[in-house]
Image (cartoon, rainbow, N blue to C red; front, side, top):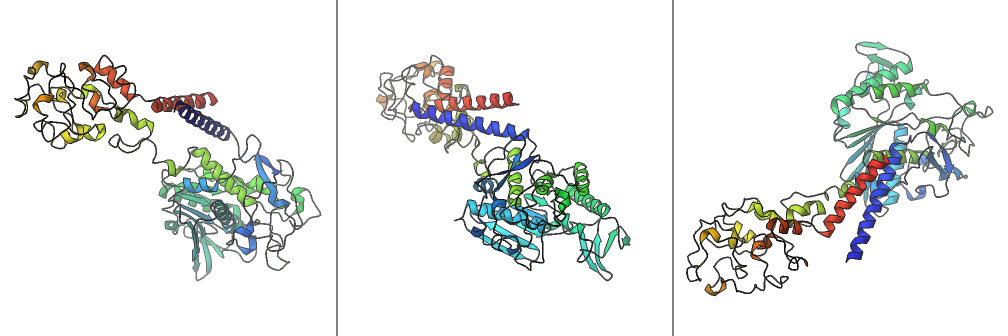
Length: 551
């Protein structure tokens, strides 16, 4: 018994220490500064086992023969990303809705996450449906819905008589964003389209409509409109907001010091190291500035550098379309978007390192529910209520019956507590008020003690269990042996320790009869602490001290 308890104690301690260590390491680590390392344990899933991948992203199926691009893992400079745990992700999000909002790069990341989760629970039932611009992948067992809403610009795009008008200061479709527990936004790729097809014919700000304007200025106005909508409509206590950062494209070999290359076609390895030789992306600064000005900041998934280094990760000519199509904007699946989702998962661990939403109901239930199995924190109030709560001068408080859950009822019918209290509490004679007259059937008993001395000298009354009728006349004298209903006690406890004894739900405790405390207060304290509770408290204190030391 002791050995098992010790093993459990050590296991919990190691888990707490490990969790605190990982949490501390991640908290002090920039996840977005690092490099790509070859890792033969990747990819996280096989594309062939994910039948709902968009055909344009399934590079292997479309004829790509090299596979090294699948084997790279992102390594931050000062820490390691925890391995993605799809089941843990689902448990953390149990019963919640996750919505990706953005362009086709947002779709790229959404499909990656659904494949990662599906591969973690391959036998779990799912449902995939599409209605208009909304695609919904639901994991039925977990009640988790992972959705993608196509929205290239985040602001309103309206068809009018003059053509398609991009209203940079208007969002009327935000009702589709509300009510979700996690939002991951993205917008940039379509702002780069200078030729046809573009997503707009005119820009509009207020009442001013214009044919053209600076793209970066338009992008900043649109992002500012989006940020104000988030500040005005989203409660950060119920909804987590992320922004998928600027994803790099590779259409010019000069950016990675290969002047002879015009596109990403034929690239099979990433750029080595942690510095990209090409120019920075101007939109990065705009996005960073807008996010910093928000009242309710969205968390940036800053994937720019890690995508800049992956010139080998695009579909290129392996899109399933004509070879003249050279896609160096999107990403193969499996591939780079999986790392974006690993970073999302790691960020969730940094925000809340505690295990899962499945474990959330476990911490200490309400004190009124001790009969149900409860963790150690709830045990002290259930095990030993102080004797002071039962003075002989007044009846027990009404909330005590459900909290104490004592042995079978034994209270006399004339006792002052409410009708339901006697069967629930079964107080001994000592709990009766001194002024309360003895029951009508009590006279045949041999001379009960005077009212003033009734509680202290009262001997144990084991024959009291019958609740509806008093014990027979011969059962009251002190010499009466203990009743069979108290098997653990080899001999009746001393008179001074009798009142608290019936109230403890741990009456069978092995040490209770061996060393009865000398006072009611000592008895209460002795029953309040169990080995499991002591171990739990020690683990908690140790964990707190370790976290403080690590900080």
